[in-house]
Image (cartoon, rainbow, N blue to C red; front, side):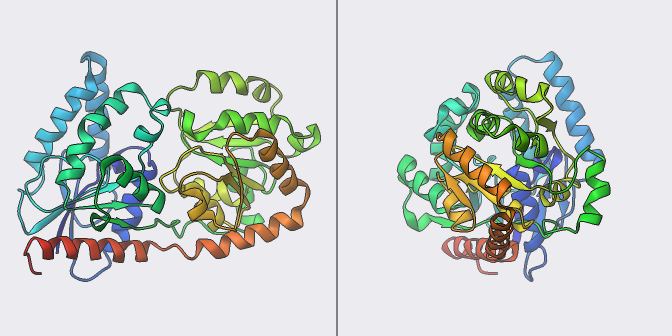
Length: 387
């Protein structure tokens, strides 16, 4: 089967969607009967491999120049995206299935599958920039209507999709994500030199990973952590890895005292190769997000054998199950109590980490690829195309 994928999220620092594309199509590329083309904005490449460095660099340079001189860049970029896709991607054909992993497909007159990761722009518009919300509200209804089939990454997202767009359940398929095999427990002697490079010691910090933006609920985490006994804060500093998003003014204000005392470290964007060690070396992982389409960081921490505390909202209970601690994202006291429990009772923390490790093995990129390919086959059959 010929498959065309919009892989442009792989050109920049990997977000959740970028990890989805990499994990899914790396697994699918190993399957028989798949002929995958990855669209990278300025070129289309056969097979699944990281985009050429020159391709990524050219796109970044072009975008930075345009941003400097052209107002309303996002609107113009949409026009440019459509033109580039029409020029570089294979011509629309009923024999080529187009998979759009980023909600809004580019113009394509052929079979198409769209992945919707979450509906946070609709459920919680206050947690997104106004421009993004307006774009989604304007274009999502038409995209959902035109798609042959819609893939979601949790049952929670599927229910939200039905609620907002009245999409028939028969047009929705849930395919859970998975942690990359790079995420696994690591021995202390292997971790030590890697973590030393960023000034950390294995087993002696609390970790949170994610873009710094309102829905990640880091302000609550900072308040909960600040309420821990001083001795615990000194022994287990809080480390946050993630690029700066939007709406961080209040967040940064809440972090000032912790940073000044050396109890909070904001690492910013962390290179992809360092992330597995950063997870594996944590004493505990805290992820009190208010809203997640899946919650991949929680699963990656579990796969690393690290005990997890997360919120009891949206998809996170589906991912964590009974293998982690869940709290109301607005309950500062509960989050503080559970974190203190993990840091003071290391026997309990170790047992919880092992439960999480076992649960993480229920999720597989191979399974995700097989379920996604089954969607493709269904769409092509409905279109009357036989392989």
